[in-house]
Length: 172
Image 1 (cartoon, rainbow, N blue to C red):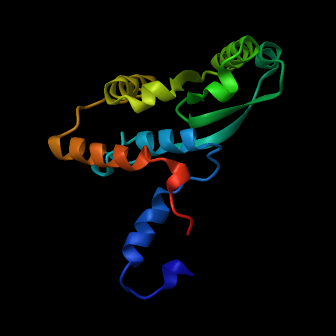
Image 2 (cartoon, rainbow, N blue to C red):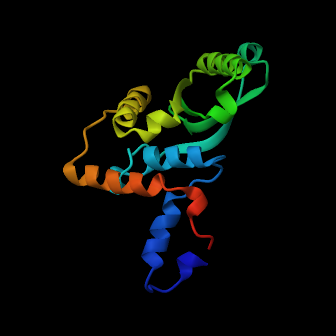
């Protein structure tokens, strides 16, 4: 096992990297949002790391009526009662999707869960994403402090890594 290895070159880096992993992201968009929202401020993220990807939420009878289904899946879910929904054009652009999203949002509200939709454009633009981060902090009931200059530099480096063309990454 990795954790039983001797203290050799690279072990700490690998252990640190494993601690950052979260299973079940369903798309590169969700992964990017998770990295930017979840990594610590020291690593350039927003520090909201205690979420789960694609958490299945069982609905109460009244919420089932609204959603017309027995459960909802939250893209990034905090047990404090927040769902960040990654609004990609692939799944959320037509009228039927909008109505379905509205039904599931109402159902999740019945369950006491706030839903914050996040578009790729909001995530990609640093100023818009900073404003979104404030909305996340407020929804989680947490204070949102501005980043230090060192944290801002780390954020810039992280954003450069997160927004690479994934199709051009080398296969390992």
